[in-house]
Image (cartoon, rainbow, N blue to C red):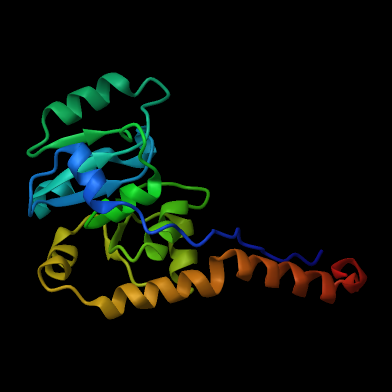
Length: 201
């Protein structure tokens, strides 16, 4: 049986309100902010996110809720954090604001069905450290340039000496392959190849 993979499409994000979000969180001026835009469950690997924040000298921001009974473990982990920790989205903020407020994004998951933050961070032009899970390798093959989540040195070097070209490259890859326009094109090509072009009218 012939099969075709059609990847989901992501809207072009709003710019986000960086200064407002950092003010509401209470991030100190000049302090780095590392965003982990996930829930808190074992496979999201919060310890790796905390370790990355510590190595970067950054505040750590975990936006999602704890689930599946992970609450007590999360409390224990956050209590031992070396630097400031922020939880959830303050009222009135969006994830566009969260990405804009961050200086880098960490996605250290050990398993995912996809991993939307990989695309969202790229669309928001944020450097991203990614865990070693199978679908991440599949997505990286499109040409993304990410940093490892288990070694802070490459991301720290980037933040010390940013390369806007890398962020522009990832942004372009995300738009080319994972935007709503890209999804529309994939579906049109699929219908055309299946002989159902009349459905496009």
